[in-house]
Structures are given as C-alpha cells and as structure tokens.
Length: 308
Image (cartoon, rainbow, N blue to C red; front, side):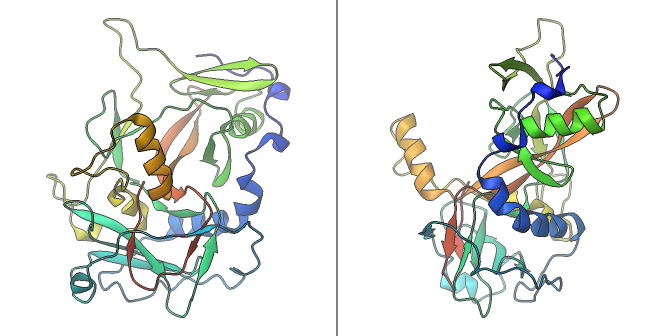
C-alpha cells in the first residue's frame, strides 16, 4: 500500500465533486439524524419528533429534475398493519417505510411525501438512511446484500468525519489532522499522476497470505442469529432496497442494457463512511449508507418502492 507522503499534491478543495456544495446543508442535517436516531416506528404513521426548522425545499437551485416514478405498494398492504417500520424525515419532507416489496419476494424500501408536502426536490447524494450499521467484513462476497469496499476514482464521494467529500479530500484531511502528513487507504494502492489521485484496489494476496477483508456482510433483519423487528432502525433501512433494474421474467440481455435500466429505475446508491485507523495510519471502511443517486423530485402521496 502506498501512503500519500506529500499532502500538498493531493486534490484541492476545488476538485471536489460538483454535488458536494449544493448538498452539504441537507447532508449534515440527515447525518445528524442517522447518528442520533435509535428509535423506529412500529406504527409507521407516527412522526419522528426531531424537526429542523431551517430546511427549505423551495430554495434549492437545481435544474429541473425528473419526477420519481416507481412501483406502488399494494393498496391492500398500505391500508393494513403489514408495514414493518417507517420514519418521517421532517428535514427532507419525506417518509421512509419498510414493507413487502412490489417487485420481489421479501421486503422493500418505500418513499412518499410527508403529510402536508405536495412535492419535494432533493439533490444528488442526499443522505436517506444507513445501509446496515452492524455487520462484519470478510474476504468473500457472500450474497446480494454484501457490499464490496472497492474505490477506483479519487473523486468518489465518501463520508469522513461526518462530512461528505471526495476520497481525495478525505485523504488530505486525515493526513493533515491525524496522519502527520501521510495517510493511506485500506485495501487500496494510491498513485499520483499529473497531480490527480489514482486509486486502485490492491491485488489478491499470494497463496498462503490473507486477502484484505473488503466485503461488508450486514447483520440481516430477521436473520438466523435471531435479529427481530426491535433491531430495525433508520441505520439499517438501506439493506432492504432492491434492484429495480433486474426482472426475472425479462432480465437484461447485456451489461449495457442493465446499466441503462439501472440509471432509469434505481435512484439510490451507496456511499462509504470511513474512519481513521491510528495503528495503520489509513482510512478504513466503517459502514455504507444510502443516498440519492440523482437529483429527484417526489410528488407521490402513496408509497413507491425505490431501488439501488
């Protein structure tokens, strides 16, 4: 692993991804909710009692984003007690709910405008919820809920020190504040080419050596270990977000077709939260969170499933 010995050559703040400045207010609000909220709603129509009175949905200056359309939750289910859990994010003007998926067996993640909100426009990378705060890291991909820690671009967005920034800026911040001018990235080699950070996952370890444990395996809700509804909080809603681009009855024929479907149908993406490890002097992954993949406008008053 190569550490960054000269922090002056790292990405400048002006090289940060364009979405960061316009999102930072909403991100900090949602990040506070994510870190402090431990309650969930077994009666989904109750409201989360934390309000943030300075949030202004109409004041955001964005180009005309697409209105989100996704699979509706069955009216029979939405009028019953079958919703597993939900929370009102008053800061964002939306409600998140976990209920029976409209597209696949099991549960799904749903969104609607909060009561009294006709529409809300949210920018790319708005923090929605955690993916799963509890889990373990391993060397193998163990299923469709496993998330690999594999970054390939210095402009990739991450959360570090409760702030949204590029991985290049996170390395710079950690090198200056924690690493005595040097900071590495666990499981990756860092190169500097033409004053731009290049990041490559480390190669597989030779025979007999242990690979880097880059795969995060969440502790699943209702898992064999006995996780129950009482363990379900906003910090692990994201693991129930299904892939809306895949359809068993009509799967995409090519990788390009899948990519196009995913861009059109999935509005949620994962961003890693990182921490500084004092022993290795590296940034290491802690857990992934779920954010909006694109600017989106929500007008639906009924539950629509979102995908990742």
